[in-house]
Length: 539
Image (cartoon, rainbow, N blue to C red; front, side, top):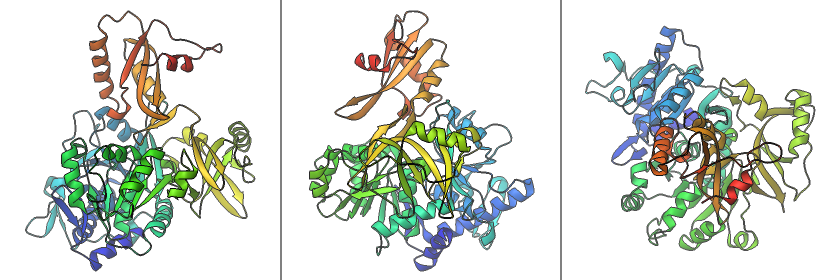
């Protein structure tokens, strides 16, 4: 139904803007026409090359309007898409392409050397989707697609097939591809649209997160499914406050979707208030902890807007709980709860060790619902329901560790072990941090083990531990503690060299802000790095 709903807006309001990025605009009529033509071409290419249905396509860029055409065109032709932001290091992109088995890269920008291996088709989507005067779309090699070429409904991604794949940080040093089905996406959209947009249409949604970050799924598809306009701000605008605020004033944003840390940066400027954004109805936050201070300031500066705190990992389709932060909630709770569970899902608090034993004995299939801890007790957060991922792409080992199922009243519940700690109190869910070494920083989920593994590959490094450094109860930055084979004589230039090497493999948000060189790594009695001692020596 999602594709049919998006197509319908091209008939109801063909000239309405579906996406705006700077001065480039895409209306609903052209979104349908161009995605139809692209889907037909993709389907034909796949048939010619005997490519199996469901093999993914990488869409590479940063906020360009053509990315939306590529997303919709892919799924109309029956292919899940993998959004990859152009800020991603070439080596990491290469890993994603190789691990995913993608057969095609649709790119909005020049492809860095070494990013794509031999045998992968690369199409410049900006040129390919440029309509010429003859009313055709021009594709690679001079191919032309008539606008009368229409994809058949049976081609498109079906309910239980994978719709999109988001790659997240992996503890082994290799990114993991989280597969989300159309059913999971529609479950999420039915929930959030009914909660926040029961009657409204033609809203303007702020898009802050890159399309490779699952938070963007919220603003992108809430907008397209309700005939709204997606207003994208890019990384250059975000780094220039004057330009960013000018974009805000021009946007007429009515639904704000971002990480809390982005709002916190905006709140540093006193002009970030109702006068700048008079149309905002909802602030929707997900991806990291919404602090009491941030929520309080927003309710003061935007008294007519609601502030919504949502929680959920990529594996559960963006979010699974929500709560409106009212003055009563602010006065009753600090830290803030992350809300109540969506109607078609379950969130359980379980004892980690007991659950692990049950899953192992049942080989991932439990005979009944897992035993839950009583209210007020901290345990591992388990999410179950139609919104849960079908697993990690081409990674059965990691999938078996994170996903399991059980039968309840004749229904099979697919469940995901979040690795998050939490508890229920007064019917509300409270997030209590990570059970392992995975963290969220500025809305990005990061496996500290991936950074450590990347550093260990550098010849200079003997051993390393990367830790999050907190200030006032919030993660502020990452610090790497490193032992080396030979004494470091020039720490400044050594750190510059380490950062330069890391940038070849990791995105900027995963690179530690500070480095400390140690003569030896402090160890616990059981032979592990003493992280508590290291935190005592952070700087």
